[in-house]
Image (tube, rainbow, N blue to C red):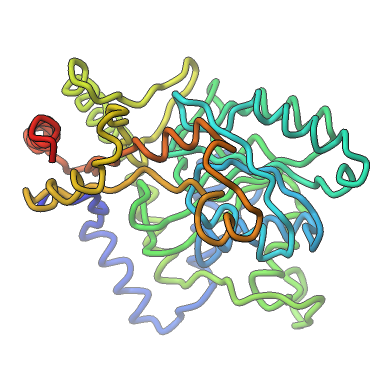
Amino acid sequence: MIRLTIPSVEEDDLQAMREVLASGYLVQGAKVAAFEKTVADYVGTKYAVAVSSGTAALHLGLLALSIQPGDLVVVTAYSFVATANVIELCGAQPAFVDIQPDTFNMDPNCLKETLNRLIANTDIAHRVKAILPVHTFGQMADMPAILELASRHGLPVIEDAACALGATIHGREAGTWGVMGCFSFHPRKAITTGEGGIITTNDPNVARRIRALRNHGQEPDKEAPDFIFPGFNYRMTEFQAVLGVTQMSKLDRIITARRRLAAHYDALLAKTPFQSPTVIPGSQPVYQSYVTLLPENSAPRRTDLIRHLKDQGIETTIGTWHIPLTTYFRSRYGYRTGDFPVTDQIFARSLTLPLYERLQEMQQATVVEQLLEALKKGT
């Protein structure tokens, strides 16, 4: 089986975890602190706060900005559902924005239209509290344009950088543009801690509030325990954290391999009906996933194509989700096909191909050969 992804877990990762497990110190201690420092130093922020998942990072990030029931958070329509779920879990409402057809990221022009429409409504304007762009598949959103619009309206920006540790735009790292950046270490990311997430920020008040929120509301800066507000158990374990430290030592190597493999896919697909991902000038993506677009007339057969490839020993999947058209959001807010036309198209046509550090070029050639064969047969 040519798998969709295989994490780069090696003997040094396993040995580090064995040592922590044998120590008996398993929850949020020195290893977590070391991992936080490693990530903060890599990204270039003053603070990093480790938590139990990327979803937890987003949830706490919103709560740290006091997002509450009745608020509106402006967010991309095309992402994994967690990006919008956390808004709902705060009691707030997502205001979805369509995407760019080339990068699959939030379209600044659509963002401008959405903000202007919301702010023009005097009954709604005061409810708009934040902007939540996503660095889709590891390529950064157009942060200069998004921040300019955010500044114009006095809105904080939270980066959903779940897929983008190590990505840059105009030389500046993901997780350093907004008030905070939220990363994931799920096994499909470049490096993994199994599950796990982290929030990067330069704001000491944000960092302090997130540290309390992740640990039952316990005051993080005093020796004597005290609880200053209700919080969650969103802590990271010590064995996850030590895995994160050893994984971080491989990050640049893994990103280099992913970029090389993505370039090889680009070459293999160059003269085919499949559309390769577009990289905008000034962007250095990390290729958390390699997502191609099917020809428009083949989109209705995507499920059959995925099944055919599986039968040939190749694991593929969709790109990600059209969140407004998932059952919950469609039922709750009445979204329909056509409300987000670019997302409609990209969601229908996107296909994620296998990509991981040890993928071989001959395996990539097999993937593309089988794609073309399936297309030719009308699978």
